[in-house]
Image (cartoon, rainbow, N blue to C red):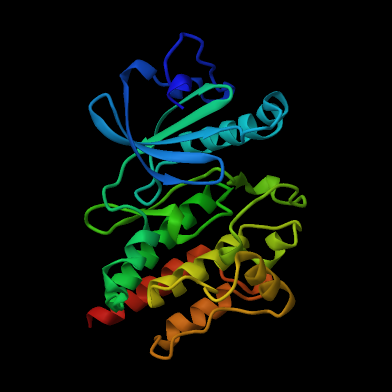
Length: 294
């Protein structure tokens, strides 16, 4: 991809966030550390600071003009536009962006702790201390509470989209399929979310609300408690089918505190209206955190 990353003076600005266009000559691209369906994540240095560089390009063999107009440009512009307006300790900070079809780059702050997913699957899989589980859950809940206060729905909350600093504080990242709440009333016609973490109404492609994030939060909380992959004995498609058609959910650990068990089960309720909002979730978790200190 290096041929796309050589500055040639024809960078295109995103209309909603022109001020976020970076000077590519000041970006030093390092090794890749993660990959997705159409994107790759690289270490980088921009103006002397460590950054993460998300590079997205058209799939090979596609009509780049069509894909660029209907998919890549739209997702890129939305992600930059949303990130540029967000400021919170538990949300990753945008550094800048750059685009020249068929490649787009989103540059964010880099956190040395890596993804929550990698952390949970490492270190032998021993159970996390309950205090750490609650602290991390609170970081995530506070971040989502802030997003919802800004009328933003993440729609792809999962451990791979949560990153850690060197003190195990958690930040929410990857806003590639996030949307304003006003945009969620229509049915979903494109790929949104990740099956193992996806609310039933999203799987069905139906109109949805901010409550899809509450469902995904419950699955992430289950991950924190178990350090396992949800529905690991199924393929992603099988997991989605079971959630929608059999009301399947991960098995709650036997040693799970009753308050967290109840919280998970409320959050992954089939009925979105039965799921708590994040103001309630933060308050409940803060009270539980205080009870642990007594």
